[in-house]
Structures are given as C-alpha cells and as structure tokens.
Image (cartoon, rainbow, N blue to C red; front, side, top):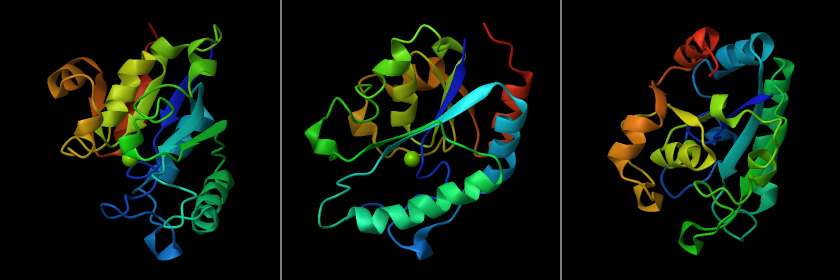
Length: 191
Ligand SMILES: [Mg+2]
C-alpha cells in the first residue's frame, strides 16, 4: 500500500502571506526554512508520495486573479523539481471560508480518490500543515498530522472538533522544524 504526505502550502512549504493577503507577487514568495533540504530527503529516501492541498480563498475572483497566482506557484514548483520534489497531485480549493464548501479543507470532498482507494495506506499517511484546520483535515482523513506552527490559532472557526481533541489525539508531532518531520518519518514504524 502506498503512503502519502498531504502537504499544506502557505505557512508550510512557503511562508504565510499577511492575514487577508495572498502570495500573488514574487516579493511575497519566501520558502519555509530548510523545506527544500528536508522534504527533498523525505522524497528521495522514504516511501512516501506527496500531494499538495491548499485553500486559496477566492482564487479567480477579481481581487485574486489566476494570472497573479500561477507565476509564483509555478516558480515554486520548478524550484522543488530541481531538488527531485515532485507533487503527485496539487489540490487547490478556491472557495471562501464562509461558503462552508465540502471541497474546502478541513472538509474532505476533494479526497474521495484517496479515501476510497484500497491501495492508499491512510493510516500510515500524514498531513503536514501550520493550522489546526490541517489537524482537523488529518482527523477527517484518518491520518495523523505534523503541526508546524503549534502556537497558531488562525482558522479555529472552521473546526468541528475541540482544540484539545485535535491536539491530544491527532498530532503526531508538533514542531516548527522540517528537520524534525524528516527524523520522525525516518524512524517511523508503520502500523
Ligand atoms: Mg497554511
């Protein structure tokens, strides 16, 4: 069975834009520290495929046209590719939080092809993200989470479980360091 890492984008692969903002120009594009080093080692050394799962609020609306989003997105992907980091799938939801779309993380409406695929080992897969909504997403999928920004409280309005339930039962590791994720996975014994 194939194991996966479902990886958030903003705040996880690249640094978060300011609240309410988007990464829509190159001066806002900053890679998360050492992500290229450690994610590169993960994909080269360990048996995981990687999928990007990102909410991009209102992508395609006049305030955030696709022509502003894709130049930085494509540049980021090209940089990862030079280090052997290839995302098997890139899942982007463009709805707004208030729409409560089933397709928007932490809901799992875009994930049926993983959930219903007997060749996908969800139990030994992980979500990597910087918000509690990523931990909620992990629980909804049946994975554990790597929580990259344990002090972050943004997005709590979109949770369906309590913060305690998520932090106590669905976080495999809370750390701000990608190196810690690599070390955890290197030593991980699948169940
Ligand atoms: Mg994020």
